Length: 330
Image 1: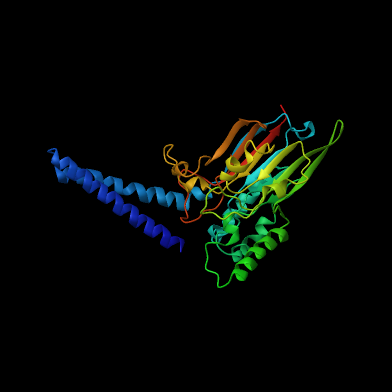
Image 2: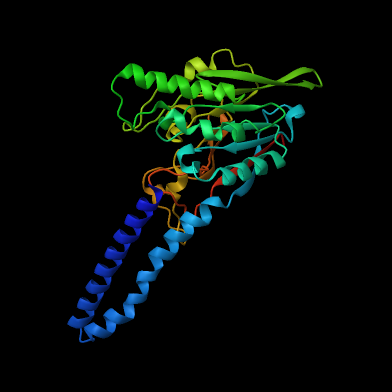
């Protein structure tokens, strides 16, 4: 299936480039240039799409990039100064079914970073829960001092497959949740956990909040309830896991005291070329770190580019990302 996707991408891109060469030669001919000379001179461009696509398919999607960033907040208790979060997202395990060795290397890379906590922001699967079983032993090796916490992404509700009944779809979603629990992950379905450390004046707390998928875009299903997830959260500093970054601006920024939101979802379109990022046409916050001053103080959003792929099994200029976020109180 992957081979067919790549083949048709190569065919389609080749046809488009050929048409553009013909158009350029025709325009040049109008202005007195030789059609044949311009056409032959432009044929080299046919090599560019195959080179990019094959590189993205065979090479770049297996090059795991670790990005480091820091978050400073006066709300962060001093006992959590230097706390290290490893943020991963969008595994889409169907894209690893023939690359278990690559997935294993990613897990080893994450563990070698010595995280205090690992936060996964959704889309464990692309279509079906049976994508998880071959990868379960590998993902169960993820280790951090405070464990692995996760949320559901839009694909984890299995909306892009044909189901004979709604009950069968709901059973598939429950199976995905069951797999996460079996791997030792703490799935935050509109809930939160409190992380504690001994402080100078007693127990310091930061709250880690997770919501089921919430999107400001109608084409993506919304299942979550932020108010429910926040109820009882006592931490001076709060971290939200929310798969879709559009949720940050629509409901979090300036409306809650959540200091840091972690998202994925966009994959940065799995394509960036000389600074051209098509995902910016769709998502205002499409990749990396964002911060804004609101009535609640400085609030941050980090959008992770993800580890797996959907639609097309390649990454061009957007390698799979492992993010290390270090919290600082000053």
